[in-house]
Length: 168
Figure 1: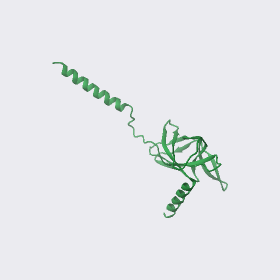
Figure 2: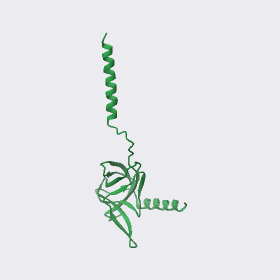
Figure 3: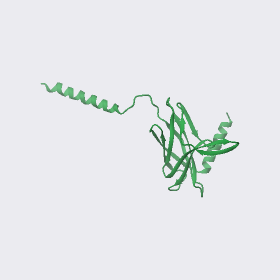
Figure 4: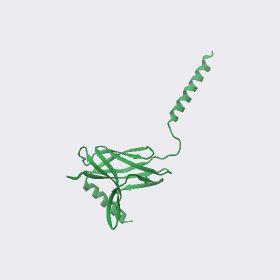
């Protein structure tokens, strides 16, 4: 009976084609993905037209990447900003792109880099989560959830961090 060799060939062909197609979409180079942690956005204060978001971006790869844009669901505009000391004065300015070196992290925090958020489509309330999307110059995007926190909660976190660092 010559059916058995034909079935064996067909089975083997299906197995290998399935194996190859399952792995064809994978990049097997050791490219590590950028990660985001501790993303949070402060509620808008009464009568305020802007608020702030903080997060940490980690680039575990060997190569630098450049953050070019951020979006936060429910907000019309998000800008990357940095505080600088100029002539003894603290000055905040927009940054159009931010290089993140390989094997490094950048913490967005008070007095440094941060996201300014504007034009809320609806009210941000403490306890909510909003989708945060970060765009990079190589076309990659990173999605995460940013927790909405109150001014009081954000102040308490900053105070706690300050106390932790003073004990070192």
